[in-house]
Length: 352
Image 1 (cartoon, helix red, strand yellow):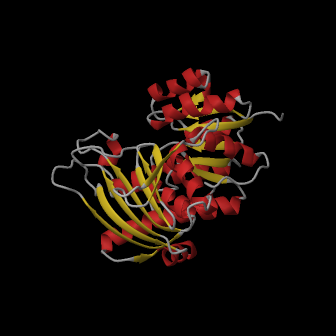
Image 2 (spheres, rainbow, N blue to C red):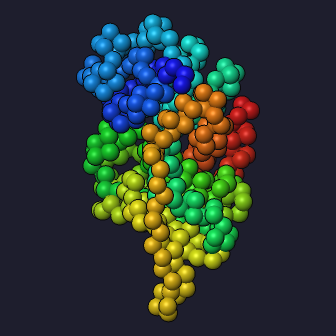
């Protein structure tokens, strides 16, 4: 086995603690990657890197440039708010690093496109951890759809609803930014839609709003219609300020209406339904797929394997720019009240 690759993680507080405690120790135990340094503006957050990654204090930095200057690394892990992704990417690329980043690529389509071009020019590899698409239940549904056993897919319905209307119930910064639901939540569901439909988006029509009882500054509720390039239609409901959480994170609702059956995923329970419910309908409970790891632990492993010569993982930059295009086209649709052509939207901004 080759020597473990070396990485620098930028952002060890908040969700960075999950990376330090749950994702990266697995890479170390597999012998695939080890920490070279950690960066965070908070000394308390850097304790996560010391505790879980076994980094000594002198390898934990508040100065990002110094961390990269003093510690040669193969790749950078970006776990900071989206508005700061580009500055981390710039430093990482300047030091010859590949990049594994939390979603989305950046906080605007323009920044996403700049990062896309910078990574391409540098000849580096980049992947974005769209973790929920790669969860056990969604992968099980995707594989069931794509098995062809139930015929062609006609349309999808998805729901993710929460009771996070009070400040800080969903992390502080999300209550201050524009379009928090789409930027920080629905981006995952867009990627799930792309994977279930096995297609990129053609058009999107988004209606978003912020109810009077919400403490978000930006829109936190949405109803969205999407048509995919392959003709599949999608209806999505997302909410962060409801009175209940019907289908929260990791327990979302997805229904795939196929030619031969309805495939329904609800709170991690998957079933196949065919026929009229009150007239001898066929209802089959389907067990979820099994494998050693899902979500970010699986994606991190696949990323390192990619750097070592394996095929590119599905969440690579070339694929994920399509998810970014759908996200920011939906935001434009919400702001303009118009249907947006996603591929024209992407092409125009990549050329700019």
